Length: 441
Image 1 (cartoon, rainbow, N blue to C red):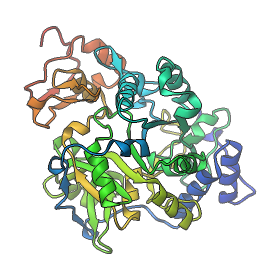
Image 2: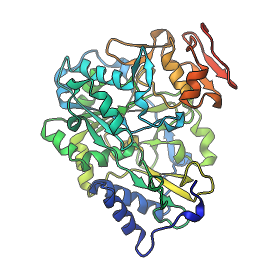
Image 3: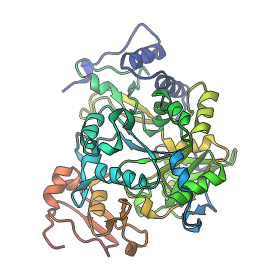
Image 4: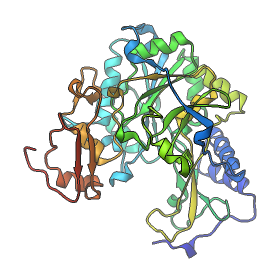
């Protein structure tokens, strides 16, 4: 195991020059490099991205999907690209490959269901589809999707998320780990999508081909598809950015919420890492801050290009500064900052941005094995359009499931949960310790 004394740091040049050289040598685009250098400057200036409760007021009086008229113009689908963020390995569940390869329901994994969702949409209009993969998920994902040849070739299906250097806390230099270069890098958060779209040339290609709207969501959220009612509402409002939010439940106390900034009246997204410790009780008050960001976003691509041009190719987003150890498995290794951004934070860049309340059926992500248990249970179903979400009987409220650390990894989960218990009418399930589930429960 690599220990602290074995690490060395870049010397003889400024930190910015060292960072630029490191990113260039790793083949990162000019857009991604500029974006990270700007985030590094914010770090040096002492910006933390924190948002005090006193600077905000809760978001209210939002439009609701249920109030929108049925239907919508199919032609808008031809002007839309569906983008799924697929960069996660699911390391929190002990996985070492794309999380979306994990079986979810009826023998189908996330990628199966996403592919079928897109092909279902294409029965109406030739909607475009893209995956933002990471260097860690690209090979496995594209090898699996070869079975869906009608989706398109690899070159037409994916673009790669950037990777960025970890920054050593003591020196603010890019950290180095001789013999273990993989430890020097981290993902930049999903806010990287704007730089990656621009740096890959895809943004210009899409606009040239008549694509105006992008619907972006996480690949582990199988309830998210481009509902025509939402697309029609977005187009009619002529908004630049739209965030889908849903009412927070007990399970969402730590998730990012929507608020309004006092200073300029703009909608903002506040993540838990951006909340001062003293304000955390109010952050977690689901009756005060009622709206949770589903990370289902709608973006006008021409307006996105305008913001990038105005800011010299950088999309300005608040930084999220996460302090960790260089080697996650070695508590004695140096402390580092991982600088991230959240794509939903882009909402504050647009004065005409809107938010719309959607039912819980459009939000069913998998971050932990407890989330997987809910999706695999009879509380959820695969619908005609290949989305997966809560059955109508649940009335939009998921069962609250808490599994002990004995179930943390997928291998341990599969061993203990031989048969997924029925959660159709469950309000709450809490398991302490390693309990083996037998059939039927």
